[in-house]
Length: 242
Image (tube, rainbow, N blue to C red; front, side):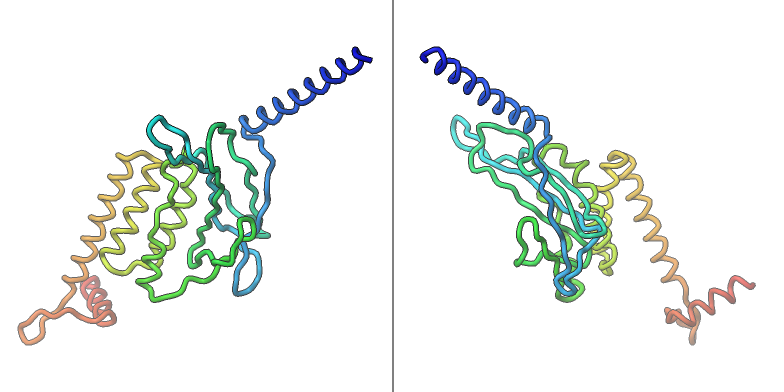
């Protein structure tokens, strides 16, 4: 009887250890259980395709002097035609972290995340306010700079921000802001040197365009005046025909 109990305890310990090792292997390799969510339009109630969903895992690491807030994993994905997205349930395995938390954010040009959203039931509401107010709300970099491989992973996020800023920008300051986001995108894709060269070329082209528009004038009583758009086009055509 004693031998039987000893054998059962041995088998139980071996089984528990095997299960624990299996879970550790799965979590450390990133093969965690997946969770699925949906992004919907608050106005229509319909699913939204093409929304960028970013999920980050954070926690506090115990240091000698004080605890340090760290982001230990990041996943960025795009919703399918049914508005669905899939992310890991646990993220990468990181032991010894306290107060672990998983946060999800969504970006979609023209929309903002509604307070009624839950972690896997995300509701997007049309962005409200004036054009300039909408521009300020859209002008936000993804808060994932400290996450592993954040530059490559947040590239779709940055591109979506640029598209919306470019669509809303009208003033020189706003156009410069949109161009700075494009510079960040191209820095990740092509490197800082090429991104800076492209930005410089765009600024030269814009300056030349502004100069050409100011030079399209005519003489009225000996004074040069800037023509409205329609007469300006006629004058350009007349000059080309000469």
